[in-house]
Length: 456
Image 1 (tube, rainbow, N blue to C red):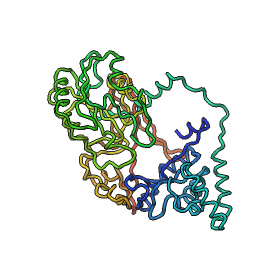
Image 2: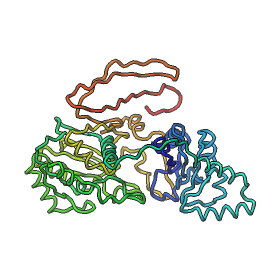
Image 3: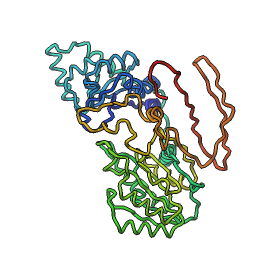
């Protein structure tokens, strides 16, 4: 993504560097992270992106790390980012910089636009009072100049509007994860009657709410897509605005489901539970939605759940329904992508990037995360997600890498050979089902036994 964006002469900026995982008190929070977890878990994605794609800029996080503000952390910005990783781009401030001169001395090169005028005034005073040596702003100017230069010989021809829409649909299809599909309930047969249930069918979750959210009034919903494709359906809201419980809407949905061959219910966290400005303290769906699922599943044996949003909820109802399809926030192509996935014009080939437990109490950070606006304790250290579940022997209902398909694949002839870079692993994969499909080949290794504690 970074290389693609910058090949067109547009700078990519990595944001929230680093350890900025808590929204509660995000301007005041001190992230207490041990050295190993910091390097192995929280700095690693930044390191990979920088070394592989060389983004033009990195922006500091709002938080402190082990007592030091991200913008005033010489070890983080200079020793690690610039010296160890050889980052050549510019470092931007966050929105609140306590000491502009100290920030520049620690490795910040450029002010975030909203606060630029205030920082400029402070730097001028620091230079005049000889509190900041001149070589710091000179070095910063050189890095900003370097970040402004692109080696773009020929811009690609712009895509047509139709090509952009098609690309958006493909992009929304790709991360879809099929979590359950009892006896091939999905894909739905064309010509069947469908009870389309849930307000989120008409108001799809295509992005998180927040300062950068787009107003997409023209974005299509499932009703308009079903109409365009002449699908037989009846729509019922099922629950009220902001997932409020409504007895009349529930009764209407149950009646509709009982009269249809299939019931497709759209659920997920709404803006109150899932937005960019606050932490989510539960993975339980609103009661109105869980009650709707139970009531509909009782009257329709072919109930399908479509879960939308940035995270999976607790699914203690999964045993009562025939199929569950999870679609992360997919952008403006979401409605058409869901149509293709539900009716088999696309294969859900996404796989879970995290493990999900049945109980919130199984999470090692459940008692501490988001509880203090001044302090965020990373007590779990390197034992994050599947690393913790495997080490503690806790059953993950949906493990890392899980996902089903509408077709079947056969693996054979796995070979492991040494090569100049280390080891090369190859395997033959064959689609042995009756449908086209895509497979993600996953290869798992285990660290050698040693003195250090390690995740499995």
